[in-house]
Length: 554
Image 1 (cartoon, rainbow, N blue to C red):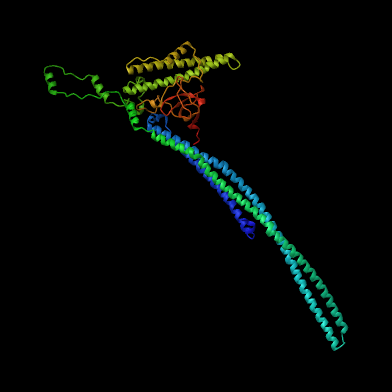
Image 2 (image 1 turned 60 degrees about the horizontal axis):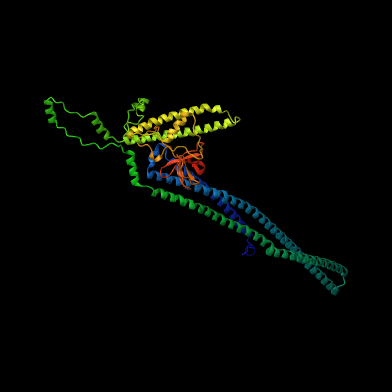
């Protein structure tokens, strides 16, 4: 079907139709813009929601239960799902919307060109028709004047014949009059014939142009307008398909996020959480025995016999009292805590005010923190020693002696930490009731510090010492100012390659495994992570792809 044949007399309506089509494209552009805005706002809102409900550092002890870890996994998947909405907005705005703007510009330019050509042809046809009408009017006027001159001549000739019959009077005058009318008649007849020929010629030219106008010229204009309108329609079809494909492409990732949420839900184990509650709050005290009956009559008899009654020892009272306690014993803070001081803190340095199980966990956490600090100081020391060796081999890079003071300070810090470690390990041995020896790694570390030199290990081959575990956090009633807080989760990472974790302090990971980031790379090539099973350790930074929460602009 061709517009040029079917719509030959609907030029104005065709022009309005193409204009409405371009207007629809502009409307589609506004729709995509608002759609992208909604997707971006939704993604930002989801990320803000995830950030607001991320575990705080002081709340990490509560996130060792399976239901809490499942919640963290769920909001992690929600964060990834929010990223897919950002992908939708970026694709719609970067491809579909951009191409649509280009299409609108092309359609407007082509439509303007074809409409101008059609208007020009219409003016030519109108001008030819006006010339035809004017030549026709001239021919009609000449024909009427010729007829009138002929009638006048016939009347004059009739008057001559009548005069001959009646009288010969004024015959010469009548002949002159008749001759005059004859000349006028011939002139008008000639003029009429010329107008007739002009009219016939103009009619032929007008019909020829009109035939070409309706069969060739205007159909071409209509066809061009039809082509650009069909081009617009095909592009709209393509753009709607691209919108659908953009949604379709993210569905697998969204389904993966949903599967991750289902996996997190299935990982909740009420029995294990109940066991964890027992391990966390168990004091280690034995159940108090029955309170014995005190026979007052016997006591009275003994008094009469001047025999002193047997009293309960303080140890017995303490046993009964301590057996009824659960959790940490509260120390007196005074009004607004102004009477609390370092003296009370020093008295509880060995956590002797805690029940046995909680004290053991508290001491173990303190030891792990000290080991972590020692590993950090050790890594710094190795770096400074390497830098000093580099300076010594090439003095242009720096003065080796400039690092001596820092190395000495570092050695003092390590020595202080070593003494702290020995002290708290002795507390732990006292708590366990048996002798506990230092680990071989600690002995070698102590020896290296005392000798003033440290074995230089390659950070690419051996990681820092693994020190703490979120899911073996210290139990008890901790305040916000507790100095033994564990690492907080600062991001996530994905393993790019498998790692066997054979080195001390490192941890096994599988390819594409998702883990939590506890500590960024400190320049030694290792990153501290936590696996889903709760184990912590170091992995090579180059083996993982890290995503930090603080990098999200939410």
